[in-house]
Amino acid sequence: MMGNVTHTASAVAHSNIALAKYWGKQDVERNVPDVPSLSLTLAALSTHTVVTFDPDAAEDRLILDGAVVDRTSATASKITGLLDRVRLQANIRWRAGVDTRNDFPTASGLASSASGFAALALAALGAAGLPVSSPRVSALARSASVSAARSVFGGFVSLEAGALEAQPIPAAPAAAALRMVIAITQTGTKMVSSTQGMLLTQRTSPLYSGWKQAAPSIYSELRAALQAGDFERLGDAMEHSALCMHASMLAARPGLIYPLPGTLAAIECVRELRRAGTFAYFTMDAGPHVKVLTTEGTAATVRQALEDVPGVLRAVISSAGGPARLVQAGPAA
Ligand code: PMV
Image (cartoon, rainbow, N blue to C red; front, side):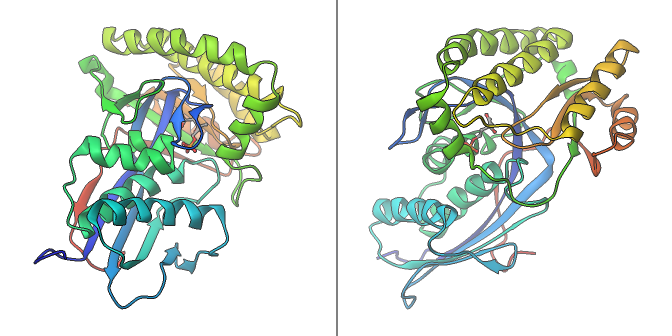
């Protein structure tokens, strides 16, 4: 069936933060985005996943950060759905063991699904002996999590509305000095998953149509600013993208309110830093953490200022991360 190929593969993928946000599905069944997004892959946050197809196993066995995943959970069905797609492509029926570890808090708005499903897609295709071209891995990752399609690539990455796979995009050389500082305001699992949240927004928010209309031009502006090395404009468009997305979430019914008091205090801190002349712009996702775009030279100052904010537990500096990659097979470290 699989000839002499190995049945185990191990992959590492980095998380990413969208500068131009994805929020909304054009095709729910196939999980295709309704708006274009643009992200930065992060070196500091990664997931390591081992997939082993086992002819003797009766069912898939999923371990996340050392704990068995509840088979009835949404996470388990997304993982099994991805494995089923790989089994179909490889024409195998074998169940799989999946052992995945994050080096950051899972499901807390730190985009663990991005690195998690990128690493899973790459490891699962590798373990099944299928080709692992980046577009193919990206399309498979997207079928489980749209943001994961972007984590297959390093650096700056785009995913167009309606697209099946992400692609790396050019940036001005000076963009190598950009850093993301992640201010963590809470540990633990968030209440509403991004899929539930965006479907609720699409169904009930009168501001969703405004968001959908605005997102492509924010994306184009941001992309052009990145290429031109106009980082003030990039930061300004990034904040606008996050705030437009959150406006649509707030107007859902019931409203989706992700920020905590510490989130708002961190945003105020960023604006204060900027007034004082420091290059710092914020964004936030479907969670309470604040991610701040700054430069290599000011990242330590920004981190310190954020850590002094009441409600911020700690802050992590990240530079751009590389693409997802296969690593030596074996148990997750
Ligand atoms: O693809 P998901 O389900 O991880 O959704 C990601 C949604 C946001 O993080 C809010 C925005 C984005 O583009 O990453």
